[in-house]
Structure formats: C-alpha cells, structure tokens
Image 1: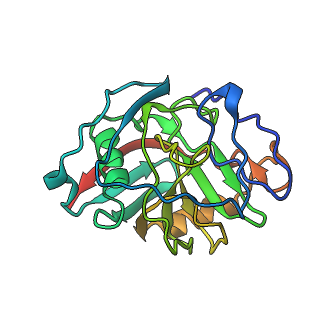
Image 2: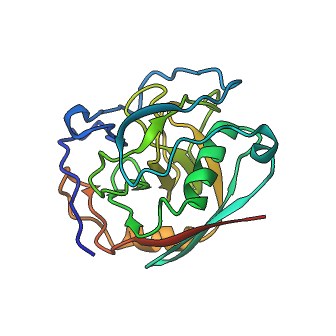
Image 3: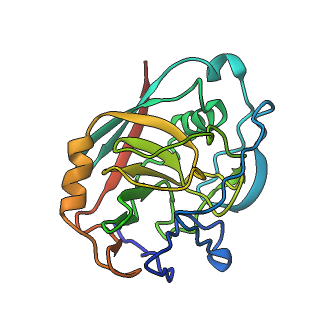
Amino acid sequence: MSRTRLTVAAAAATLVLCATSAASAATVSPDARPVQASTASCSYTAAVPADNFKGIPVFDPVKAAKPYHATLRTSQGAITFQALTDAAPCTSFSFRFLSEHQFFDRSHCHRLTTQRLWVLQCGDPTGTGSGGPGYSFPDENLTGATYPAGTVAMANAGPNTNGSQFFFVWKDTKLSPAYTPFGKVTAGLDVLQKIAAGGEDDQNGPGDGYPTLPVDIHSVRIGR
C-alpha cells in the first residue's frame, strides 16, 4: 500500500493531532483550553474534506445507547476497545456509523509520538493527517478528562471540530482535557506498545513521525 506521509511542522512543546484540511493544519498544546459543548442534539454538520465519503449520520438515541466494543484488525495485531456510549454518545455513534460503512477499512495509522506525548493516531483515509469524513461534530465528555494508557480519544483541529481521526494512548499521557475520550482498550494494549517500541521516523520532529512498523487497518468490526 502506498502511503502519503504527514508533513506538518511541530515544535517540541506542541502536538498536532488533526487538521481539517492541508491548508489549515491545527497545532494544539498539551495546555490547550478545553471548550465543553452541549451534546443534547448530537448534530453532525457537513464539512470539508470529505474523503471516502459515506454520508452524514443521523443520530439515533436508541441505537446510540446500546453498548458495543470495536475490534480493529491491523497488520500488527487486533486492538479492541469498549465504546463509552453513555459518556460520549455523539462520538461513539459517529465511530459506529463510520465503522459499519467500512470507512476505516484499508486505511492506516499515520502518526506515532514517542516523546512527552504517547499516542498512535489513526482514522484518516488519506494518510496525510488532513483527511476527514465530510462532517464534523462537537466535543463531549471533557469535564475532568484524563488520558491514561488505553484511552481512545478524538483528534481535532480546535474546539468542536471532530471528524474521523482518533488516537490510542499507549502510555499514560498528560493532555489538557480538550480531546473527547470515547473508548477504553480492553485487548491489544500490548499491540500498541509493540508498535511504539518499533519507533517512528521523526519526520515531524524528535519523537513524532510515521510508525516504523506499518499499522494497516484491515477492518473494524462492531460487536456486543
């Protein structure tokens, strides 16, 4: 599989978790100020880019309330997480929608950080760090949010700009509560740690680049 690598300049004290377009790369600090948005409506708003477009979800509160786990079958092994459907219904509903429409299949995780911040970022079908699903939605579950190992959270380009990009925390990480936590790894943390141990290529700066061990997502399956 050919890969276009992320080319975003990042200072040592900053973390670029996502960009909504190549022209609007967002740099967020670990001390970024959180903005808690209301999630009562769970609105999904059309946005660009629209890569591998699968439509815009229509929130179904009954389906959104049903617990589920997601299993990502990757080239480095399987990773399973329990979705926080009660705490982050809008986010977990969006992830389920995209997974059930095979949005993530045959994509790859394009970014690994191994200094100060310890995350593996995935969910961009373009593999550039600038891709998105064609819609955005507000933040949620930020009050008191922490990011211990095993957390699954949304990458963003600023407040209320969630799309498809997300990250796994493979080692306890200190971040400002500005990234919606929506899952907890229940199996495969060892897979994440193996990927991290393989290192990255420093293309965005020391400890920040493309994973040396390629992480191709073959499929994402939703189960109870």
